Amino acid sequence: MQVDSCTSNSSEIPDPTKREAWNSGKMQSSPHSKDGHNAAGASKLVQDQQAAEDYLEHLMTKGSQEGDSGADLELPSWYDEQLFRRGQSYFSTYRFVMNAGMLAGLIAVLAIPSILRVLSCTRQSSTAFTAYRRYVRTIFHTQAWYNHNIADRGSRFWTSIAAVRRAHSRSSHACARKGAGQITQKDLALTQFGFIGFITMGAHRIKLNDPDFLEATTHMWRVLGYLLGIKDEYNICARNWAESKLRLDIVMRKVYEPALTNTGEDFYRMTEALINGLWHMNTMLSVNANIFFAKRLACVKGYEYFSFDHENGVERDPQQKLHYYDMGWWDRFIVSYGLFLVTYLHRYALVRWYFNFRIWLGDVLTYYLPYVAIWKFGPKFAYVRIFRKGGEAQDFTSGLKDD
Image (cartoon, rainbow, N blue to C red; front, side, top):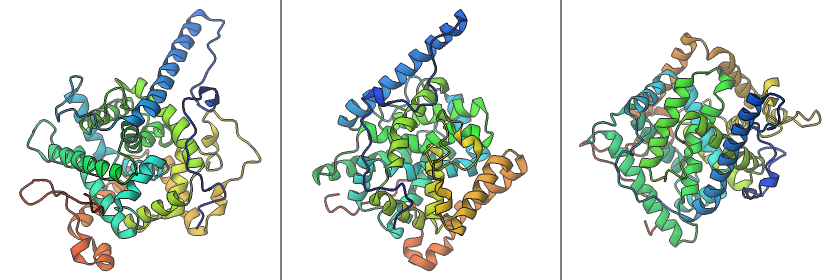
């Protein structure tokens, strides 16, 4: 089944080293100015953009040849405890939109061919059942990073980090032996975007204009990226939000936008499994609507909804087909309802509290009483755990005989 008329069987990403083709970024501006101060500022902007381009070229070339950093599970020298803790605290404040942003990011990650190959190889995400168990584990691990104390080396924060890194290592070696390729620094950084990219780059769309949220959240994910095996030179979160924004922007424009423009059957099949799996947590999820959300956030042409969606540095084409009208009435309702909610109502504290509570309650039910999954899969498989009773990690295996 096709998602929409822009879907094709090609999932290849344009070569990011061909800079002459990089002409759709919203951060481009002319270095010329009649004002000396403006010229200096424009010159600094050009330098920053060049640094971002250099980062992307390095990530997509050298980063595609290197695996885990091999660094010990120790905090980096640049770790800021107060900033990290503030990053953790924002999860309870913006739980609803952060979950929505990460879900869109997970869908976008499936458009990256090298990541899709590894996921297909592990056979953990190709059906609703396997996707349910895999992505519920992912959600629980992410919650452990936000909710547990990083200062306590015996906390579940560190147990979770170590377990995820071990799982990545096993899957990477097993898939490499099967010819699907290893998990590279490029894959890790692009996956890191899935967790951090849309909620930060799209913050202005939902009136989340909170500089401290952006600074603290990107620092937190810079630390998480380091602990999960990403070298500083490839980490998509840089020294501060200003530098991180440039990296996130260019990755979104030059990697995710073209990748999501040219999605194929494998992308749709894996996304369908993801959404159908997580449907057992949230029955409002829809495959086509959630694909629309992800493509809209990546600024894919034809997936605009509001008039200001065109204010992204790309001139609006009046002949451009809007894929919103290709969807059925239920998918269109979910898109309209969801975008109205996060764009206009999310700014109010009471609304945020209500929907944050609903997400929290859904997580609690998924852990203690996943009634929809029990009905569909049975009690034995509906309950997902990432920790044993003693607090140690609950190892999980893939479908690989080599693993």
